[in-house]
Length: 540
Image (cartoon, rainbow, N blue to C red; front, side, top):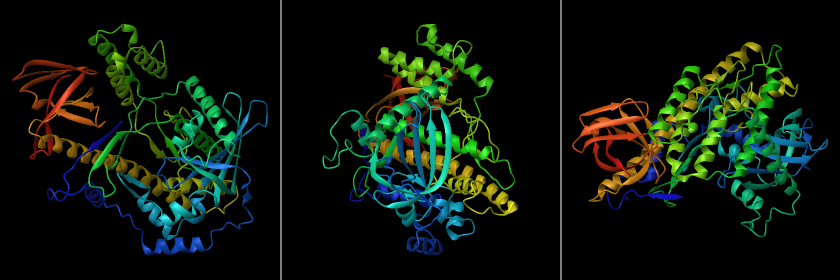
């Protein structure tokens, strides 16, 4: 579902356009879309000498690689090709990752700037790239029908989807086609291609797409057997409603099965790459891992109690509550999702339980030591798959290449210091992107509620009460699918909170709001002194 969020145009008021607000947000966070001249000069030199004639590269251009990404993606980090065998019911995955580490080397202006930025930052209608676009969208990107350098993984998977053999090399590859998740999904669903002149059937990569679906499903079943939690998230995309960027548009992002299956291959390579690095304990290997601890036991105990109280408050069967002694969190969330499918009246409650379960997660960080990645269900995990958008990916590729003997090792002390700097930059950038996303969402919330307030009779926005804080409620409204805060002090002079319920006493008498209930919000005013919106809430 798509929701247009209107904002006044400059001809109506002096208010900035949506595009201007996004650019102002980038300036506020000191993000520079353009790169220093020293970086651009190095990039131009690489374009002039791209290194495609490197005799150390394995020539894999005969393999029918394709890229699968969002419709508008231009920085294509990954390309894949899947073939049958070598054994019965086995499959071999070839996964090519852009060879950014060849062009962006420690000590260069490009690496220095990549370390300062740490990642590519994403805002509505704007990407602030880590690398100059002549690299990230051209020379390094695995674009269609052109040769490209790649770090190539070869993973043999057994009938159950588990890895049986892994090989890594530097190669020259050519992507046959730039595909989108939507195009691949239409192909899997037997629908006509968007462009009849370029069908996906009958091509040399067609069987690879069919194997992707089968292998991806095997990997999902393997994750389920290992009790990896699959959260049902609501993902929101924000962009501009018109080419001139005068207004925002917000919509719930549709996630295709093709996206999930492609993600399984990416996760596979990151896990196997981490295992490769973790096994290299010899001096000189300075690996970086992504660590995600499991939820803490006291939090799980409190969560189980909350589910019982919430199920009881909604008058639902006690069997719907989670009993950690009887089933895993992953199995319970799957059961809740299935119950909602059978009984649509459970939708609000199921959404809330999913969100509350998501809050159990601890923070993931980059670390010099391997450790559990709870979200993936792997003993160690590394970020191989985003070498053009994360400096940690460039560094990780460099370390793998040195371990393979494909690059000369750097002095240990220099590399150790550099690893510390990369880890700090990567963790800092993760926090910054979170703040950027929150700020961008707030721009859309402000535009939405300002437009509502401009009406003489502000419309109601219906949603689900999905969270309770110490002094506020969190409501996920249906359109646009954003989370709004309702402050308890705005609802009456007296209020009290339990883990599942907010009770208030005010002009409208005594009222109670329970997590998972459908509610209706209406904007009352903007509190300039606190820079927040005052909202009225009622039962929907």
